[in-house]
Length: 191
Length: 191
Image: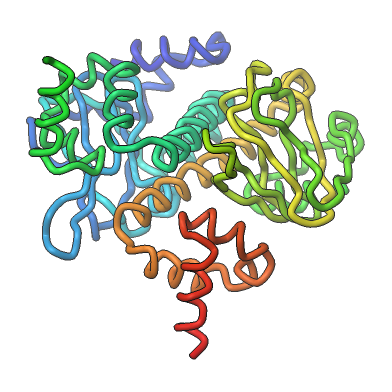
C-alpha cells in the first residue's frame, strides 16, 4: 500500500530522501465495507485518510435528519475534516465508504512525528493542500456561475468515470438536486 | 514588511532556521491604490500575495458583465488563483484592492527558488493551505445549510470587523444577495 502513496508523492516531489519502511511505520492500513463510517460527525477527528482503493462520501446531517453530501474522495485523494484533524477537534461532518474501501490512515500525533522525522513530507502536503484549495476556489465559482443543469453537464464532462461510479442519489445530493430532478436531466442528456 | 510575514510563520512553525534577509530577498513589496487590480482574469497568473495591510476582493465577470465576488483576503492572508499560480496559467478570476493595500509578492519561479533554499517554508505553506482548505470545507457546508438570512447572521457573528470594513455592495455580492436584499436584512437586525 505504501508504494501507491510513494508513487503519488513522487509525482510532485523528490522522494529520494523518503525511506519507504520509515514512511510506512507512521501509517495504518484499514479496510471499510461499503456504507461503513470512517469518521462520525460530532465525534473527535484524530485521523486523515489516503484512499488506496474505493470511494468515500463526506456529508453532514441536516436538521430534518436528511444527509447533505459535501464532497467525495477517490483513489489518491486525502480525506478528513481538516478543521478538526490537526488538534483532534469535533468533526463537523461524517465520512462513509460508498464502496468497499482501503485506506492508509495517519493520526494527528503520528503526523507530527512523521513531519519531525521526514520534514520533506511538508513539500508534498504543501502541494496536496494547495491543489485541494485551488479546486475548492473553482468549485465555488461553479456554484455561483452555473445553473443546476449546467453544473451536472460540467460534472459529466469533467468527471465521466466518477459520474458512473457514485450512486445516483448521492450524486444528486452533492449537486444539490433531488434524485427526481437528476433523473429528469439524465433522461434529457441520454435522449 | 518581512517582519510581519516572519511573525505569521512563527505562529505555526519554528522560524529559527529562517534567515530574515534571505527570506526577504525572494519577495517584492508592492502597494495598490483602492480599486487597483493585483490580478486580471484571462491574463497569466505568476504571483501570489501576502497581505501586509489592506483588503482585496477575488471576483470574476459573469456573462452579463456584472461581477461576482468569490472571496476576500485581509491582513496575513495569502491571495492568488492557486490553480494558475504554480505554472503561470491563465487566471480564472481577478483580484482587486478594496482599500489602499500593501502586499509582499512572490513569483512562481521565486517560490521554487525559495523552497529550494529554505525548504522549511514548506511546513508553513502546508499549514497555510490546510487551514485555507479547511475553511473552504466549512464554507461549502454553510452554503448548503444556511438560508441567505442565516448566512448573513453567521457572517456578522463570526466576522464583525470585516462586515464593517468591506463595501456593502461587495458583501452582498459575496453572500449572493442583491444590495437591496442585504439592506433589508440589515434594517431588520438593527431594528
